[in-house]
Length: 316
Image (cartoon, rainbow, N blue to C red; front, side):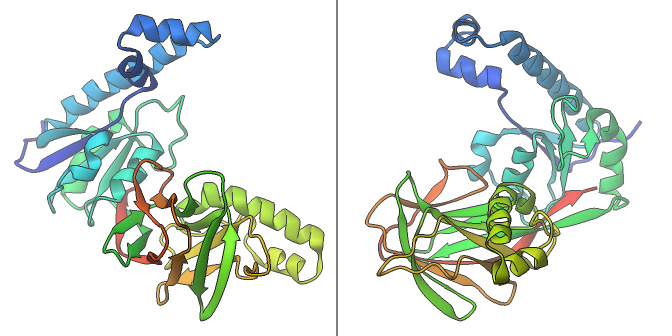
């Protein structure tokens, strides 16, 4: 049997849908009434919660054989201080792995899929039953790691925000965003639904859907647009550890004072994109789809967007 060490193992957990409902409605019975009143299947919520809680117990039992286990709920990620030698285990879904990587500085992350029948888990290559083998291998340096490029937004106010998948820069609601965009030596004032800046990891998510619409439109237009679409990799995806980012402007609107030619491109590791807000209010920047954790991006604020100085590290 493996001998426990003093190394700290951080176990990242999340609330299940059932736990969130109980927090909202106070009791399980009230949560059940709400779901079934709307025609939903409450048994699915129960099954998911049961499976996850069993995975938590099994995971913690194994981890305590190898070190000091500290459980952290995703709600406290932003304020939790990770040690440089911490080993981080994330009990999925994929989004929890991505959110965790933003707050780390090179500590390896082991993604564990608590319910393989329910979750695909691109960032969750391991099952709970494999931890007894994975943990000592990682501690002994016998496992391979995969680097994940991140994006970084730095404001002239001093605020900083990292992204593992993507950054959204734009309006907080369904209105037009107005800003001045500078990238690759070109500058353009624009009005749009916002800008998506994606990493390689994020290129199979939100960026993929935007790329699909752009590629179909470009192909239909023909000429130069068709050629540009043909020169772009199938679904717009690119490697997780690529040294660049891709950006798309959503629904750019050309007018007397705004243009729409600088709407798709690449930000290499050697350059940055700058965006100066012209929105009096409700301008925001958020990352990885977490709208509640945002930076204010209103008139006069300039954001510098580029490849982050650090990478995420996942165990494979």
